Length: 206
Image (cartoon, rainbow, N blue to C red; front, top):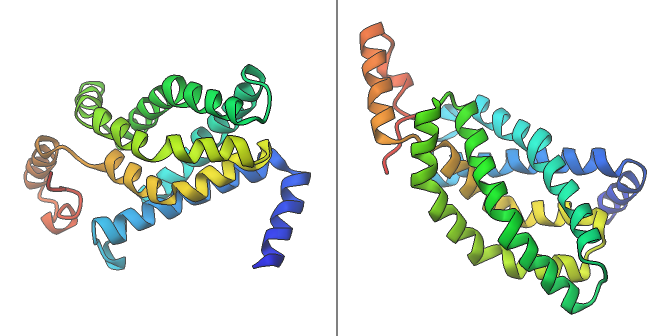
């Protein structure tokens, strides 16, 4: 384990940006696997590999670049490593960045799941407030410690490790299909004579 950590540190020193993106994408994938297997209890036979791949792609191309860049900007906005500076960074992060990031994340996830604009807006209205409140239960304390103790180039990795549980919740929330949409898909399958059994895992109970 110590050897893996040393290897990670070496790679982080040589390729900080690339390693941060790979870490973010990989841990988003882990979060989705946990969501499907432990929260939704799909079982390996019904695991949605395509969904896991979508969530990993969001990690690679959205979560990693956006959060990694934000931490750099935040370090310029609030200079210093004191407790006071850490508190200020946490407040700016949680009051300004987190609400925007969370809305964008849920919106992108909905678009990748094939939701129309109207369906996506409806889903955001339903899920966003609950997700934001849940965010405030976890992240303020984590971010104060992160900004105070952790060097800049390790912050995204620390956040993503802590976020494995959070990612499980987010991927579950992002991929939760509204009941009305599930019924529409069921009707579409009946009309096209597709096997209903293939749809059974995609209609989630609210």
